[in-house]
Length: 407
Ligand SMILES: [Zn+2]
Image 1: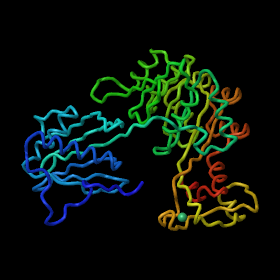
Image 2 (image 1 turned 90 degrees about the vertical axis):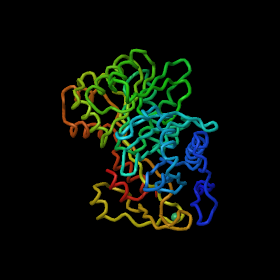
Image 3 (image 1 turned 180 degrees about the vertical axis):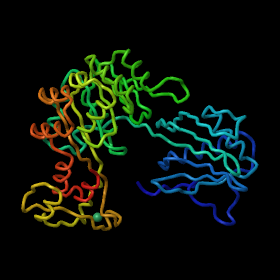
Image 4 (image 1 turned 45 degrees about the vertical axis):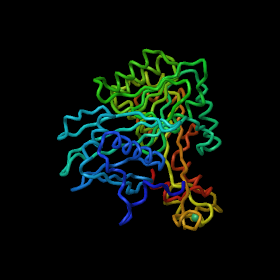
């Protein structure tokens, strides 16, 4: 994307005519605040900050990680601006000495945006951040996620089951949600009832009923999962398993003969299974329900214009503990005009796929260690994250260092 270029992003020049904040009437303020939000959406900002300074209310937005000056409001309309944001997001405008959180939905052209508003009292008044959550139609496909041919074939086969639990795991920011939606797109059919429950609805899936917890409503995430399962969906997606109650509600849903996709933070596939057992999921229920566990990482993709090859040495193989082709090459980042000098362009995902077998299920029921399970799974063909990453590094997609650092 090019640098955002429109009036609102330009800093006011010295001697420039005053901005249109002269009229402190409500209508002008409403228009001005709406314009700031609109500009934020057009610039692809992730958040917009209304910062109370000594004499002005300054507005900046974060675009691609950097704060960009937008405009400022004079002292006399400060309260009107803040009230506009607070009223729209359902906050109490009679309170200005306590933190508040609000939410609103807005349409900008054909784009539906969710705005999460947070207020924090500060030295010169309330500081407000508006976080923008862009919804997109889910168009991703698992065939476009960089899975190796063998892993993609195996995962597709696993997705062909009529019921079971599919766990998509990895650390935060590893692209789990994208994989979940890609997987759902693979199995969803018009004759199915599909429902989801996720704190953030990032993608809209046609035909899927997408619920989310309400911070102000007094019911837990686990209760939300149970309520969803009572609707008897054929396909269910559970946003994030973080505690015992979530884990049990999810696994019971999968046990009741439906397709359940769930997201969870875990270091690898066996660690994910261990986490569920540690959360008190009965081993026999897990063994009876589990259809597949994916674990993934997002790695910086090397720029193909400037990446530099270097040979795979004996020492290097020892260091990473893998046997690799003797004539193999890894690549390192360099930097060129095409990649803005960074050496990287985009990202690539690495995956580990655990598929249960009768023997592995018996081992889960017998409460054998994650280590023993891993050894058995590898004998049955599990390709570890490290191996998948090393193969992608040998293909020049990413550096070996980035793969090793991600594990
Ligand atoms: Zn380059």
